[in-house]
Length: 550
Image 1 (cartoon, helix red, strand yellow):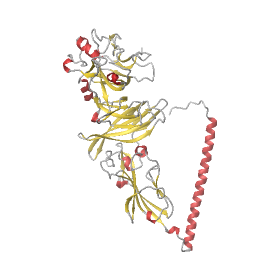
Image 2 (cartoon, rainbow, N blue to C red):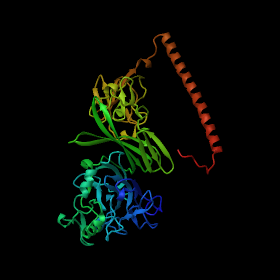
Image 3 (cartoon, rainbow, N blue to C red):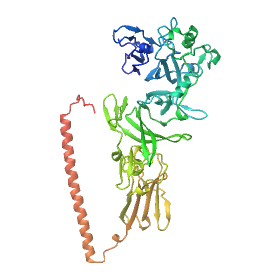
Image 4 (cartoon, helix red, strand yellow):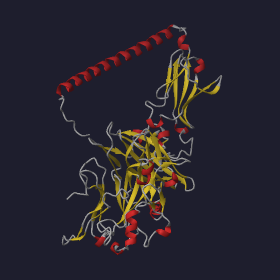
């Protein structure tokens, strides 16, 4: 019962979509892309028999792709299928038959069949009479484009049938890289309305077919009854399922690409934000990886002539060490659901104050806005600061907290903006500047004797003197991250002049010493508690214990 509906191997990449309307007789049916044999030799795009729901009688027989024909399908891995208008679209990657004379390569494809397809009368009687496929192009543009040839997942925003979003990777045998590309339905239809591709002989190159050689009605066009199609059309589509032109990605560039990462799944959220009465649309991408992380990317369009721009907002470690297999998004619960083979997790879409502790990161997230009165990142509402596109460089300058520090002459001082540098900012250039009375504003040059840069891009000043007093600003690009006003107390190093000064300093040191003693006792007590808990846990644990799913 499940042949050609689901695979024999659960690890196979398969897809299926239930189509209610538009089929022959307007009867519902299941469309699938999967393996129809245990040996995986017969991969198929399939529609089940269509039955009358009232009588249970079979009205129309199943339809499938041509068996063992590499021009139709060649070892495909299906990633998605959608019911779009009068067609069903299938997205997959397969061995590129048009490249076989130059070597072996994998291309991404989109294929379509008409929902009313009932096959031919004599030719293709059990097969699709409207099956076409075209290459999907996801590449970095240039004189010699860099291609991400292997589609890994595809996503369509519910209710929007005009755009598709996919994750693409390079071959796993070479340098690893991933990209996100978007495709519009008009561009897909344009490829299917273009020229066909053919190979005259096994040693010939694949070339476009002249329009004058294409029979009428045009192969692949939806008609009320495909059994009435002439044999010339059926023979042509049997040998010419491949289109010549590839489907170009939107804006002629990927939404986002990154090396040394493997995107496995993708979901997309669209939001509209009111900025001073002007509504701006943002597209937020959540791309899962094979090591359990989720990359959050936002895309926007300033002007139709300028195209789109995007930035990486955040990286979540959701299922550490486990490839992300499934992702879903819930607008109702404002949550992202992520699953690996061993766990399912829920991630809130709006994590403003829990994720961002400074204005600069907060204003780049379209879900959030910075409250300059309370210096807190909040879910966005009109009146809060937001600058996703980074069009206002100094938007956060007034919200940067100016910290004051009084240090003793000769001590070492640590200045920093982050307790832990966010992964998305690790590649950014961080620069420290010092404003002093003698030199004015100058850039800090790191050296081991005086200035040391920490792993979190903080600044350590060795053996502070009066010359080190003044303001220190930390900049990331053209944006101010944090600022310190440092005062050097050189008088504490000189002997007190009066007995009262001696008593005060002695009292201060005694008070500090008591605080250190109290803190040490608290730490020792907690350390002992942790040790006892660890011993109890080790005694109660069993080597074959099954841990519950998270």
